Image 1 (cartoon, rainbow, N blue to C red):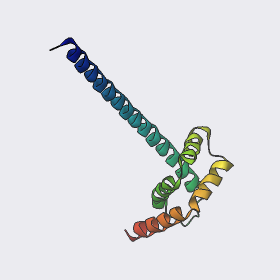
Image 2 (cartoon, rainbow, N blue to C red; image 1 turned 30 degrees about the horizontal axis):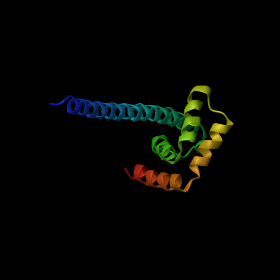
Image 3 (cartoon, rainbow, N blue to C red; image 1 turned 90 degrees about the vertical axis):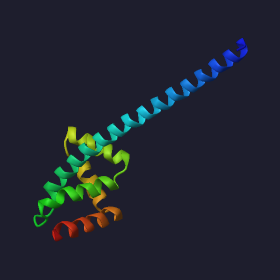
Image 4 (cartoon, one colour; image 1 turned 90 degrees about the horizontal axis):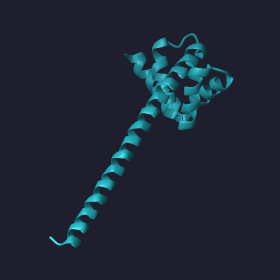
Length: 123
């Protein structure tokens, strides 16, 4: 093998290795981001359940709080999830209650809540 062919092969292998390492690093970032997103969803859900438990009408069964909070989590965007997650540490305030109320009034939320109510009360 000539020196030039050897250098070309080595350079190609190095580029492939670098590309593989970049791919693995990006995959690791996605995994880390997913873990952060999951943690934010869990703490945001705890905040929503705290608000719902305190503010739902008396006649709403407690077994509906979790499905309702699932609906609201699914309707929230990343910024809203962050606000709700932060409230799990700093405490629920009027802005938190207002955000949960806003989430409750979204069409996707009301549809999901209606389906969850029928499903849970039927079982």
